[in-house]
Length: 298
View (spheres, rainbow, N blue to C red):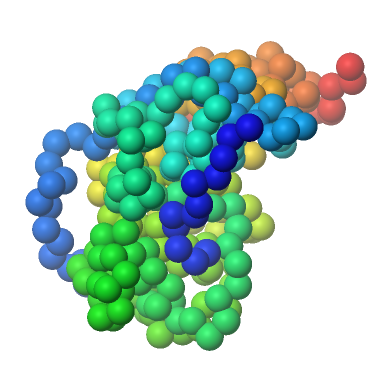
């Protein structure tokens, strides 16, 4: 059984924000950020619980700067794989490398300096303002004593601006809408100032407007910050539109991997999602469009 290494993330359309929301873009040092972002290499990773195996020998290579979407049915291992890559779960077998460095040899804090994970859900933070929550993303860089000093550093200011939440900085988090809170949580992940960003179902519980807004923001920030991004998505249509690459999991194994135009087919709908459907091509954007018809009866 894999053991838990502990949380490393602190408390829990187009997507383009207005100038008022984003605020002025601060000058941020690029020291140590030259060159391409790190890639991710997962080799023969297995993980499970006493009564249930979850990952069964996963091999995956995410190229530096790539935006990859993980898809699959509930329980297929998508979220678990993200947590293994983030160093939150230790695999029973296999290895994970971030930019060629073995994750198993890193401390919690070292891993947190290299990869940020936006969880699917987060606990309530009563009484905490947006600024106070986003500051929590700096604990890996500043350490316990540094966090006691308070105040923003350039990474916090930039995270607030990049996520378009500068205008809400003094508002209580629990007074925000679901879509607004999701952007604040994205700012929390960005405050880590890592080159690898993992997102676990970032559009969960959001209406269509805010889904497109969040995904558009992720695409923009991948370009502006030069990030390697892996996100779990339930909506295959969103994955086909926004990701460069789709990796499909079924029962803890990778069963399809490639560009959306290559892998999004009626067979994928049936083999991975248990759905009978059709696939067409968007006449404007050129990405695959799914037309699910009915559940597949086995």
